[in-house]
Length: 164
Image (cartoon, rainbow, N blue to C red):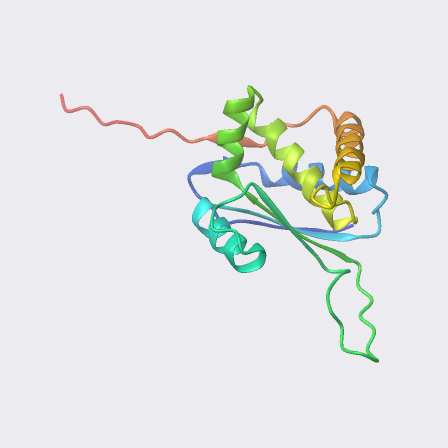
C-alpha cells in the first residue's frame, strides 16, 4: 500500500513519515490494504479554488476527496487501478477547526483524513440523513481503531529579533 504525500506548505512542520503511517493505518482499518492513496496538505487559497472549481462552492473547505474509481472512462476501455483516489486537506482550516473544537491539530487532521478516505470508499453524508449517520458511525469506529494519533504537526512561531 503506497501513500503519495505532498505537503505544499512551509509555515508548519509536518512529520511526513508519521502522516504516511497514519494514512496506512486508516487504509488498513477500512479494508483497502491493496490500495494506493494520494494525500496532499494545502493552504486555504488553493482549497478555495479547488472547492469553486469542483464543487461550485465559493469558499474554502476542510477536506476534498477525488475518487479514482469513479473516474469516467471512455466506453470499451478498462482502467483498473489500485489508486483509491486523492484526499486534499487544508491545514489552516484544520488548525482553526481543532482550536474551535478543543482538539489537537493531529486529532483534527486524523478526523479529516478518515472522512476523506471514507468518501473515496463510497460513503457520502450529503446524500441523506441515513447515509450521514452511517458515515458518522463508520468514522467513529475507524478513529477508535487508529488511536493513538501520533504527533504530526508542529506550529512554527516567528521569532522576534530584539535590538540591544
